[in-house]
Length: 341
Image (tube, rainbow, N blue to C red):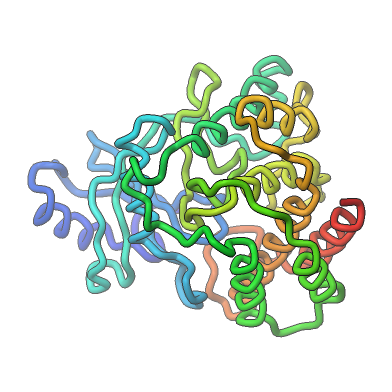
């Protein structure tokens, strides 16, 4: 973690803003730390020595259209927190005045928990606990997809009709916005996905980046909080499951900053995760290879965007120098998965 005045957050300006908007919340000078591990929006832990909070803001520099929307992220966690159906931090306030920190941001409660990002971390807790953690991830996804968007006040949070077509167009546009080198196979993957669109089930709230290292695991090995809602919307719930399966089957890449935990003893395989989700949700998962291939495509685009920002010197954190090397791997895996499907 980077302490003091980490890039993108001035503790004194934040304290002045919080004292004005939430009098009595902060009891003294703030110390801020950049929480590393994220690859997009920046997350900070801030403390006055007594209380702790978390601040989220967009990345520095290059920002793709429709991405990094603090208002949407703040809205969805606020709505889900009220339902008590999905564990999320309580949202304290949203600030869209860019004069405070240089970008919109929001402040939420600090939740105690462990982010498991590597197989080594899961191995330390033993196979039985590791199995419980990963299967609990599937159970929490079922809970999320069972939330009634209208009852939660999220009926207009997205446009479910034509969701998959729009997703492909959106990620295609984001690819072009960051495209500055040859990427063999990426266009074949995009066109192959477009030619084989499945029929979507009834729309739900979808997280958009659902994986183990985007949740905090509590002391009882259950999900204490689901984090990083920047890609959430209303849409096809199987896109979340496809992404979870992709991360569960993706082989570890030595030196890669992309998290994978599948090699930990006790880690359930993709088939068991899918079966767990299908049994609890009642959804037909027969088209899941398409969704998994789409997850590979989406991550390839995200990684290429991060690589692009790295080449411009606009990223914060370690491991970004290797991101670009991973993109062809995800393209190839997406093509293989789509052909199998």
